[in-house]
Image (cartoon, rainbow, N blue to C red):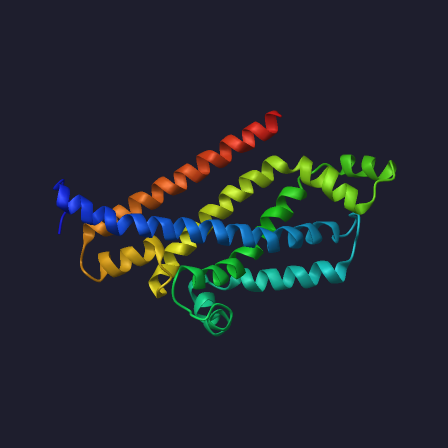
Length: 225
């Protein structure tokens, strides 16, 4: 069926689209938040444990870096299938939006760690050395120097991460993860509804553009302040 302006058709399309958008937003917010809960400390440890930093520890840096690289190298769709037994034991099911959050977090947290690592490494060594010369503790340097100095880059990193999670949620729909990806597969591809497939793409593009615009605006505001 092709796109139509018929009110009945638009009403049915809206009834399909609205819940799918809600599921996608739910997955994106929950997964991004939890990924930062895990990924932010990992990124900080990667930086401070690097040679010449405030808490140099080559063993910690290499171990974390290896684990993060292994997780990042696994394609999300494969990782999601591989984690089905663990997801089922944690959530009780491997299908649905809540079940999709766990593999989303596991896949996104290493990405967050690298984003945070890159942002913190942009902080001038002179600023860190000045804080150390004033007797600041490692915790104080992290919370009062590294994170505040890198806040603009970190904000942009959140936007980039969120956009990546949006793409992952679309892939999660191919294996029953819900959201716009599931709508595109179940009602668009499987039923030969090109209009629904195109509509989901348009909605995803709008969401991504909105997230990117908000992230850029917030980063500029933070930089100005």
